[in-house]
Image (cartoon, rainbow, N blue to C red; front, side, top):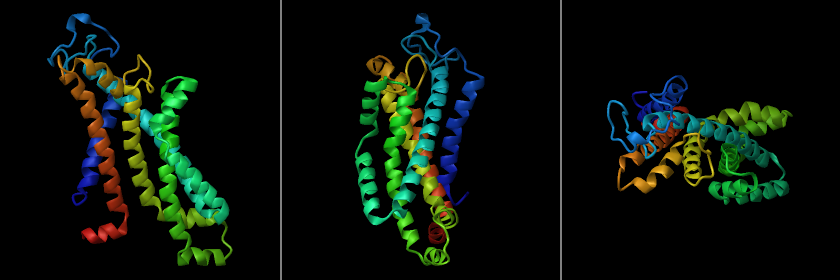
Amino acid sequence: MNQNRNLFFGLIMVGFSAATALLSVLWTPYDPLEINPDVSLAKPSWSHLLGTDVLGRDVLSNLLVGSRTTLITAFLVVIITMALGVTAGISTALLPKRVGRAAIYAIDIVLALPAVLFAIVLAAIYGPSTFTAVIAIGVATSAAVAQVTRREVTVILNSDYVVAARACNSSKTRIVLRHILPNIRASLFVQASGAAAIAILAESTLSYLGLGTTPPAPSWGRMLASSQQYLIIDPIVALWPGLAIIVTVLGFNLLGDGLRESLDPTLRKSRS
């Protein structure tokens, strides 16, 4: 851990964000939806540690509850992304060449589709919601995971031990479970961590545009959107949700790099 600074700092940042989300379940200084015009845009004080927004709502309470909303969304996106991406990547590598090429083209088409644009289309059909954001981000980011996974699986399928396993009439399921998944484990952890960082940015962007988490549920993106027109009057209101997004995204990126260093033997040897 001492030699792997990325993993150390990544765990601290992600752990801090997760702790704030857990804390919001048990305690918040105020009701995050409580409106008090008498303390509109109040400066940080002992009564309101991070101040209040234009409606007099406590910023710290909204920040805590918003972390729960954002992290739960990111968690659901990672599940969808990895399930779709890994399944598609392995399946595409195992398919015959002609069928595999068609699958590769399909992955490339999805990869070219931005998550925000996909969310706009889904929001136009089904209406903006957290569910819409999760599906849009999950499907859009799964294509990148599928592409990376397919390339790695293709290399593994041409290795000597997989050729030997095929010669022994091992089934495709056995090859996947015993040879492919253990050898792409490090890559999957890194991709999952990167997907979480992308999900947080995408969810914040969609909420900022009004296509993600719907009112009155607090989220970091909606906090930024509601504070933008008061930046000249009180710029510190936008500082806190922006800082929360930066710390959490940076934490997941560092965590992914740290996991790759810890799980990849070639990187461990180069650092030793």
